[in-house]
Every structure is written in C-alpha cells, then in structure tokens.
Image (cartoon, rainbow, N blue to C red; front, side, top):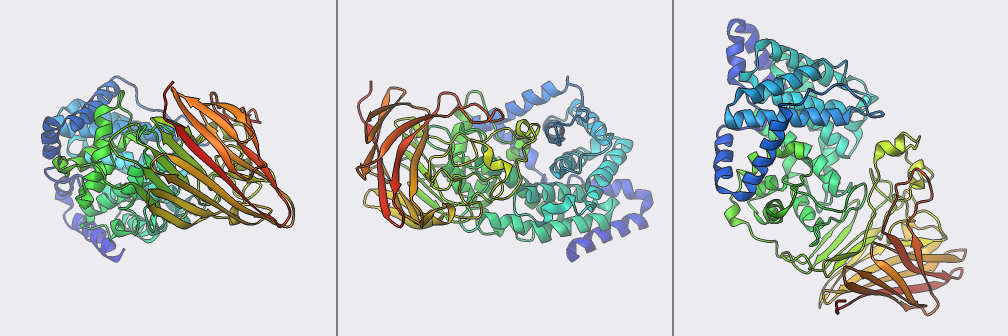
Length: 607
C-alpha cells in the first residue's frame, strides 16, 4: 500500500504543479487498465487467422451493433438488487469500448458515453447490495479509461465524479463493507470493481484511490485462500467464472497501472483452478453443477485463455476452443467479460493447443472433489464426479457425498441445480440465512432430500459438518474416492462413502455406516432424468436415449427399492419435470454396522 500511496501522491503533486498542462498529462496516461500497447493489433491479427477467435469477435460485434439502437439503462430494481442493470451497463460500455478500439468508429464511443452518463445520473448504485456498486464502478472505470481520448472533457468529469462519489465513496459504510472480511466471490468482485475505479481516476483523488487499492491488497487474499490447496472453487462451476473473472481483472489492472500485482496470481490453487474447471465439464457438455450452479449445461468459459497465457500450458484452453468452435448457438459464461478474453487469447499460441491427457483428478479444500473421465475427445466418454464438503460454505447445498455419472453419452446421475434467488426472496424466503434451521434448507433443490447422497432418519445434514476426502484410488483399472461422512450425518457413530469406477464403466457406491445410540433408517438416493422401473427387490432399471443402466443393491439382502417423484413439497419450489429419485432404503439397529453396496452397471446393447 505504501508504494501505491507514494505513486498516487506523486501523481497528485505533479498535477498540482503543472495545472496548465494537466489534461495533456492525463491523456498520456490512459488507457492504464488491462489494455497494453499493441494488444488491439494482436487481437485483429488473431481474428483474421483463427476461426474460434473470429466467432467470438463476431459475437461481440453483433451484440454491440444491436445496442447502438437500444435506449440506455434506467435505475430499475429487482427486489433488493440493481445487479441486472449494473451488468447490462457493464456489457454495453465494455463492448462498445472494445469495438471503438478495434474499428476506430466514433459511434461506439458515443454509445458508451451515453450509457455511462445515464448511469452517472442514477441517485445511487444501490450500496445496500454492494455487488451492484462494484460492477457499475468497474463498467464506468473501463469506459472512462479505454475511451479517455474519445470522451469530451465534460463527460469525463461527470463519469469520474460518479466513479468517485457513487463507487469509491460508497465503500465507507462498515455494514456494507462486510465483503472485506469474507472469503467468497463478493470479496473478489467488490475489491476488483473498486480497485479498477480507483486506478482509473486515481490522479483525481490520490489518497482515496491509494486507500481503496491498499485495502484490496490487504483483504483479497482472504478470497484467494478458497482456491487452496488444489484449485477447487468451493462455490461451484458458475461462481468460479464470476469470482475468478474479477480476480483476474484485479491482477491485470494492478499490473498495467502499477507495474505488478503484489503476487496475487501466485496464491495457492488459483492457477490450478483452470485444471479444475476443465475437469468440471463432462464429455456430454454438461458440468458438475454442485452448489448454486443454475444449469448443468456447460457454456463457453473464455477466461481459460488467461490461464493458458499465464502458464504457457495451451491444454488449459484446448477444450474451451473446441466448445467455442462447435457450440450452436454460442453461449458464454459472463459474456460481458468477452472483450477482456479477446486480449488474453491474443497472448496465446493456440497452435500449441492439445487435449489434456489425465484421466482422474482429485482436489482438497472446502469442497473435496474427485473426477474421472475416460477420455477428452468423445462425447460418449465415461464421466464420474463426486464431492464431499460442507453445507456451511457460501452457496453450498446439503450435497456432501453426491455424484454425477455419465456413460454412453447419457447423464444418468444428475444434480437438479439451483433456483432463482429473486423468485425465492420475493416469497419471503431468507435464502442466505445461516444455521442449521435456516429457510435455505426448506428448499427442495438445496437440501439433502433431492441430492444423490445418503440420508439418515430423514434428517437434514449437519450445517457445520464437513465430509473430508480420506482415501483415493487410481490404479489397476480402479479410480475413486472415500469420504468420511460422519461429521455431516446425525444419529451415526461412523459413516463412510466410497465411490469407485471399474474398467471405465461400472460404478460401485459403498456406504459403511455404524448407527449411534438410536436405530437408523437409511436412504440411498440417486437423482435421474432416466425412466425408472423397479425390476425386483434389489434391482432398478433405468432407460434413457436408447440406453440402459442397471442399479442393483449388491448387499445387504434386506433392502427396499423405491422411485420417488421430484414434485417439490412447497409452492415456492421450482418444478423438476422429467426427473425422479431412485434408490434403496434399509435399517440399522442401534450401535450396529451395516454396509450398503450399490452397483451401477451399463448394459452394452442399444434398443
């Protein structure tokens, strides 16, 4: 912070001493956020030569040209959030700024200017939900910086004043600034947005800007620790893109404006998270959508280009490039960030891109994870992913021990995903309340009733418990993991779940449970979109897309199969059409040990 403070104070003193030529000095110092000399030339060259890059550029161009004819955004709240508006402003401003720099056409700069002036006129940017402020600050910071030479002086003053008053000064309330103490995506987004604002207008408020950047450097490592040690982002697939995009923008803005990022990029697990994200997308094109990941269908994640450029490992971007080339229509996670991805992609040598060559991946951390895939190039490769973890982490579900499984191009074991936040909150649900008995655990998709895991005495999981990874297997045609489920289950003395795949197809899930001081009614559940049929007292047949999977209880002998509807219990729950829960129930006497072994056996014939 001291070095940055000296930097900004020096800038301030320079302006005070040379007031007559301040405008010229300012002009020479922009752009200073993320964009380097020669970057746009490299992007143009890449677009001319690379089909995937050309497709991304065309995506930006089409959207931007559409925005030219649309009205500017107005301050319209959605419940307690302005976030949708902030994101729309961000996309319009950044897309228009990119297209101006790419083409030199003033119409794009004028459209971005109009959007920024409209946002500057808002009464505030909704500081009670500070993500809204952070994204709006980032939007105007990038637009102000990238379009500095194209903006009239009066517009520059208005936009900079809004960044300072509605963005940076909005960070004064301790109640609103709880994100500084958190280790989740709020820390990354808010620190990233504020720091970009501070770096963009720093010469106009050097002390305030230095304090904002210094606070980011002090507190951002709390969020970075969530990646440690192996790269798992505990908030799941969708939130990785959200939090990590702002992490990368913070790093890149510090590099471009200050010369270095104080080593933030070296934090344990950050770079490794790119491998985590590659494994999170299954051969079918669906992701392992644990926690609050809204959809299983994977989308483009061009942020992976930054990791490829950062490490020189082009395999980190190979699958992403394949998705971009083949996806119809093109779907991009955090699409508003796409212009930055173009800058990062232009730093890569995609001629070196090759598929990853690993079969299994294990990660420790807040949400321990095991993933197996039989290959990287075929849509019908086998895929198995299982997780441990805790319900108490931000955006977590009661899903410790759950798994997803694909074989033959079909996802047999699924996760229903999350539910729209606003739809629940407008019904009075306190979605993010903490604790064992919070409203969150009444929601069907979030509690353990709907997940493919083990349930004891029909009770929820322990909110404060955590299922740790205690063993892994990766040899002799056997790949898998063992979780200690004891901390997340009530009424048990011990409980372990082992999930193993044999010879690239057959899966065995083994639950080893010792009841506590009361009898245990045990329910083994798998959620599926396949059509189920109970064959006999130990066998369930699943059929989907002309394929068949047999789910069979190998032991003990006394189990009862079931098929349950996924019609949710409350009117505020979202429907789950064409899905069901299958599984087996059994009992364990007080203090007695039982081992429930369930096999998932694909049937090779096609209907």
